[in-house]
Length: 308
Image (tube, rainbow, N blue to C red; front, side, top):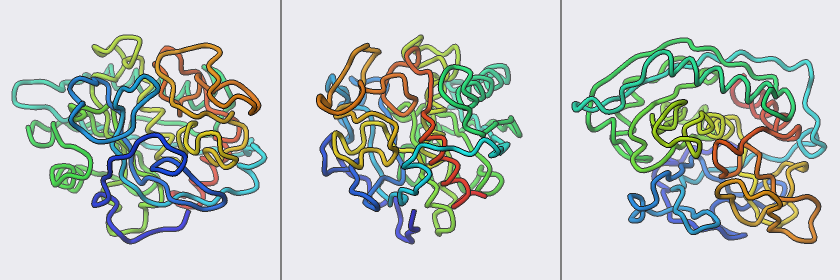
């Protein structure tokens, strides 16, 4: 993934699902987002720009950056069984003065436990080689940060003040989400002047036990966003094109998934059904079970290239 020195946050764009727009790629190197976010309440988010899911629900704004080059390992879908990385997670719980956004340590530990099950293949799929441990928790009450949106001065200020560790530390900011389930920056932000933005922002209600129920409150948002933080694209990026999401073993998918529609097949004539159980689709949390071996390989490669 070639690095860029331009500001990804200045490139916020309205983008809709298309073979040539924000989440599309041409092999071996093409344009890709530096950050992404997902909407969990379509009525509230109707005025914002971004990508829509298969049911027309507005899901995310896109900050563009650059995509990584597809490597032989990810093309073959082979991950190293010897790969092992323990990632320190720093949670920054941001609340408003009315008390919204409060998150207990138990919930954060439950999220880490779910994260580890997802990346260890205990829900399905392969062991990716990544393990997560809760390294620190801090809590801040500030209305502007609680409602910070992607690419805003409030996001800048929050992250400049709270970010901990280096490129191999995962900073997670729990906020209102500013209408979105979350957003995350790709690893090519490391080494640029905007490295302070590196990390994941999620709606605190998407944590385990939150108010979105089995749709978005089982803990699936953080693995999805962490996937982007590790260099993974959406399974539907590139649509039915040959390049797709730059991982060979995820079946081609024209449209993102909403819910858990078994048998969904938006690229007829291409091998396999849509990967609705993959963490990098837009399915409900209750539908998520796995990353693919090729995604594990790509994540390992991206880690070694940018975060190691």
